[in-house]
Structure formats: structure tokens, C-alpha cells
Image 1 (cartoon, rainbow, N blue to C red):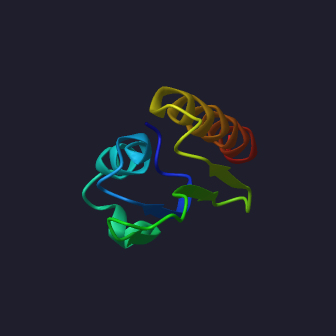
Image 2: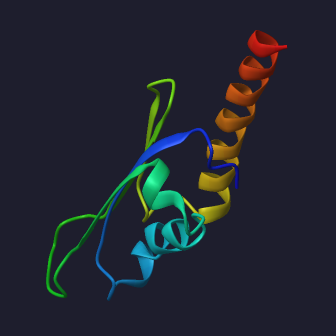
Length: 97
């Protein structure tokens, strides 16, 4: 996963619900030093909560992607995040080169 263009991640999930596993997997794929380069916000819902989980990723260009963990799989999220990160990398290469 290309994480150098991510400026913020916000995750809300219930750790006891299998369908809300995607935000936990996404957070585990972030590099260990990501706390210094991006704003990470995590909230765990209680066991009996009826509230839905969510994952929101903000990029350095201001674009924000929101995902519903019960409908989207981790591979789809990774593909979307990598696609936008590659686009930002191309823009950076064209402007600096």
C-alpha cells in the first residue's frame, strides 16, 4: 500500500462483529511510523452497539474516501487507495521533474 500521500485515517468499528473487520485490517497495514506523518483517529464501538462502522481516508490533495466496512472488502479499499496514491505520485513526478 502506498501510504506517503495519505494525510489522515478515521476508523470506527465494533471489534466483536466479523463484518466490521475491514477497518482493523486497513489500520494494521499502515507503516509503523505513520503516526508521525498522518492523523489517525480510531474509535471502538461497544459490543452491543447498533451503530455502523466506517473507514475514512483523507489524502494530501484534500480528497476524502469513505468506505462502509460491511459492504466493501479490504482488497477493494486497497485498490482504491493505491489508485489515487499512484495518481498523486504521477502528478508529483510531473511537477518536480
